[in-house]
Image (cartoon, rainbow, N blue to C red; front, top):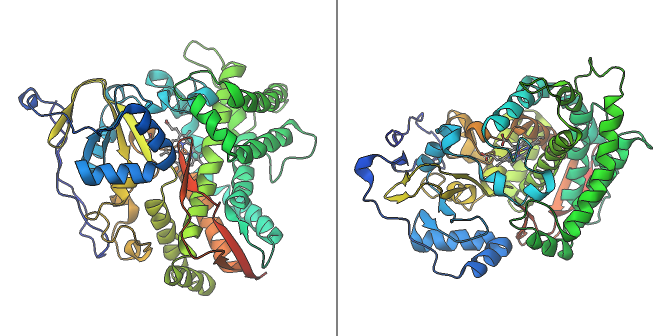
Length: 477
Ligand code: HEM
């Protein structure tokens, strides 16, 4: 099989801030391409690289991209590499390849000790495809439309509670909204779960652990768990708390008399059977539930928090959003453009990876079978040729661009791609639209300090280090 066609077929962009990358051949190696060299390697000891990546990933990838080019080899916690690339044609070759040629690296990620090996996120091969097929319909765009009203109510409720004139971090407030939304979708409850129910206890435990994971001790716990399939130390204790709340939810739902009619995700996966006619075990259900809750709420909340962190430091962009939303003129387009730019400039998950099963070409280099190849979302999103003035926050780059993000499948990739593309993308976009609009309409916000917030790396995510602290100057009803 030859390398994928590298010519891009994009509609001409009418925005001066959206561009193209020069073509770069990529894909399974042809026999004629066997003489290609391996990518240059970062000349630092492995332990130092692991530390740098866990603490200061952004500086690390930008530095070595500058010094070694758009493809380079690192040594880290993932065995055999990984090689990092930042070219959209390389991304395309990995997203469009047959799944058996490019199993996902999530099977080896820090999430493994938390959600186990059997969830849609961590499984590979037929099991992954089966689980994904089962979960796609409830996360489809049309199904998500049903949630919009509920998301709107959750955001209005939250905004009403915020203090005026006092600085506070937006991220936990965003999490309160996104946690209620994801819990409603999974468990079929409207709004906050009722006191005394197992769902309420689970919600409390998730909230508590989300908070605890920002403590310095949790970072130690994270490092201790790198490369392990089973959790140890603090993480193990945290998971025990979650499990004590999750299993009773499963048990109660198994006994529900209306299980057959229910449309929530837990009931749906509880009714599903494998091709041998076997239902999922409690452990498998638990893995799937935790995956959806954990993959779903902090990512969306932090993505929103980042967008606000950027907006509050870019007055023209904030002014334009507020005006559009309050006047109703171009409101939808401006909200969408702001979210696209927020996710471009601060992708909450800064990279995704695949382990190539055959030798692979990446531009002028080749890597052997078995190499983990990481696509740096952060680097792709900051290519000068794709996004002129990449470090500027410019929602307007998307306003002038024909085709929107639909024509940027391999250039705008905060949700990854191919058969592993984020299952919750439609839900996450719907949540961001509703919450961003409500906040811009009802609040006058200010950053608590003029300097930008640094990124903190937690697990596989990149979040605003101070939680996107802001001050509400005025609230409208
Ligand atoms: C802004 C918010 C979000 C971002 C930035 C995000 C990003 C991502 C990324 C980068 C991946 C890996 C894709 C790949 O390897 O190609 C992923 C996978 C996944 N996400 Fe999201 N996500 C978000 C919200 C959600 C939500 C709301 C849910 C819903 C519960 C969710 C559920 C999942 C699942 C289940 C997977 C695994 C899919 C698979 O491997 O087949 N995510 N997400």
